[in-house]
Length: 622
Image (cartoon, rainbow, N blue to C red; front, top):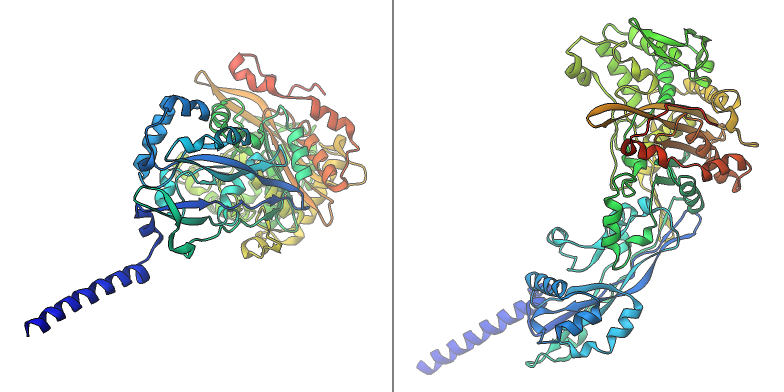
């Protein structure tokens, strides 16, 4: 009986151990268990990141080889630290710091000691690495840019941080990820999936071959290539025109919402943020407090829109029945708010909608703005109607575009003014500056471009976006392909469009006509203030211009915003006309406009708040 009992116990214990081992091996297996085994080493094989092409198939971003020096802290043996640091091109303090950081992350898992060696450094180091136990070289890909433009929209990649590792377990220390722009927005598509090989070690810590004959190893999956909506030639040309100027340019295809160019000035060569000098270069760019090249003005600069906003007020007034195209207002070289007169540069006289637009008459739009509110019992109700119409153009929102940053701008509402003035203690005269795009309204250049596209389409727009294809397949995302309709009836757009066409024929942009292209546009001159030594100081006005072309069946809508650029037709108007001609014709015939923009800079204007030189508000020198 005792023999049977003892045999049964031994058999039961054996079955229990076998069952537990089977469970651990078959049902509870996870890569983390392997990584926790000191007898197994994981070697990662990083995939190539997906290429980025422009709308016409021109290469924008590819890859180039680079090499990381890796360390497994528990395998490090005593070494000649000074010699090793000399080979790596680092000092001893950095070596000690990086090794300590690697031990904190994991003594058993590999960490990056020195990232992104060049091919030359790799060739010099490769033969000597066997002398330094616990260290090895791992190949990876870095970005290669086939353009020196588009840094703000393409973005850059950088090493993952501790927060990334905690949030996303698929990342490993030292891995690279998209940090800004397209690289960040489409990280999961571009990144691919890394492969891994598990290496078995003996008790002397020597490699003895693949773990489980390599059955658990995985191959890397390369990232997918994407085609973006950006036109490489137009983007490069626009950045060339922006040399020495601060501001933003956004060009859209009205029929699709595709972003043709997204330009921020000043900018930088995206190649500066690749390789071992990335951190040093980024610090120089980031701490340039005058130029701010890392600040994307095309989607982040939220400022007064100026006179282009008059077109929206005209459409709201028509929709609400406050005016007709024949309604007239008299301009006395300005208009009065109480006893205070506000100026106008149209020359004075009686204005209807058409002449009000092409001469940019402040008095006309102040009168139309007041009449909108006169339609309602209270100013608050008038504000509700006005706000609804204005926001239907995508103003005051993030628009929903596929870029990872932006600002909503500001379209004020009744709650906003109740907080400032008190409930029912304000009227249309109080907020009359909104009639001419000053006041409390703020927009970004991309919102201005989208507003212009909605007018070009006579009442609808498509969400601006940069993704066109994944692999060879065109995208079909409802958010981008379904039209968004404004609250303005289509019939009211035609008189406004005609007025904008007259801007080029006999109005404020008559000097900017392009032969063979019928353009509709609107100039804007925006008062510009800042604080210098605590005092509110008026700077040189901002130059704003919006346009689309051709007038019928438009192919491009554009917004140009130039800080301290004087009149709207002066800098912004020149650039808009050149961009339109470049896109539609592929060549420039207005070489006079081009010569001015390539030669003229505004660097002296931007230095004035620091130099103490006076600002000459809208001094005409051309």
